[in-house]
Image (cartoon, rainbow, N blue to C red; front, side, top):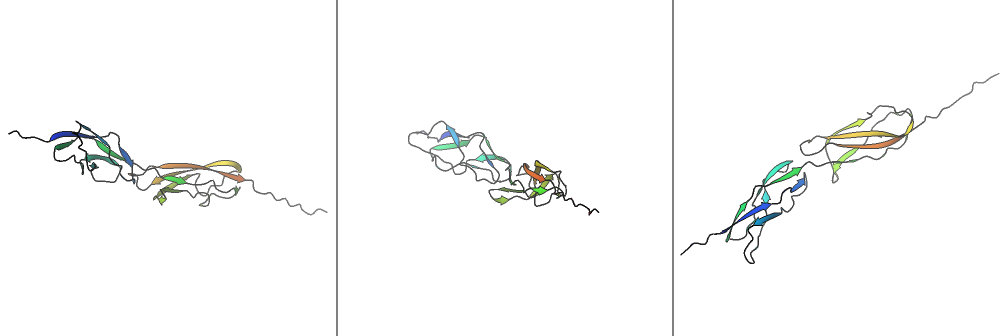
Length: 176
């Protein structure tokens, strides 16, 4: 009496699947060959090697099965976690009068992802303490450098500020 062996099925995860750092894993898509027989179906899902930092991770069969009549073989593919890009929130500051030095009132950007602040350093151009010449729509720039450079991208933003002329007071000397 001959032995019936399980049919070998090669499961190939779709190429180029990825996620952004901090997001949930997607449901991993895959193809397979040869096809399943009759009404048989897959149950469960692929998984991947553990880890949440930016990097490349190998897929694993996880809980994926097609039943006892099949032997699943996983083709080598990888899943990538890519850096998250913080969102800089920084509105155009209120007008200032010539002679007013730039300060935290104007240089007040914040960086977050989905409402959660990201730790890091803000580098402003021009820097705090500078007195700008009078003029409209002068550009202020910021570069945000996250503390966690492994998982987050640097990000930049620009705003415009108007610097109005300082009022000039003229006082006439009494003349006789």
